[in-house]
Length: 96
Image 1 (tube, helix red, strand yellow):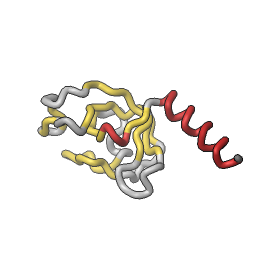
Image 2: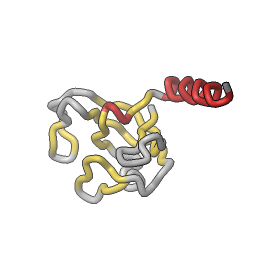
Image 3: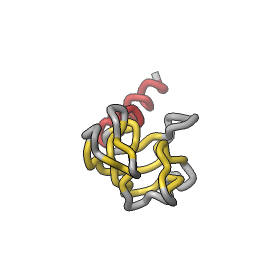
């Protein structure tokens, strides 16, 4: 899945990750996820300086979080296949 920026510009992909859980009571960084977040492992970083929506400990940016579990808002996550389809749609839409 692709993690998108949590600040403007919102349409920038900042990392690629894997969902670990969407359980609202799961703890990430001493804080329960809640209903608006999912727990993800950051696999690949596209924008090192992108801020984390819930920084904790020494994890302040996406670059810091590579290989670690973080909380990320559901509405800023797009699954990889959906992302490819949307990009193709946007590129076709901009031509016509």
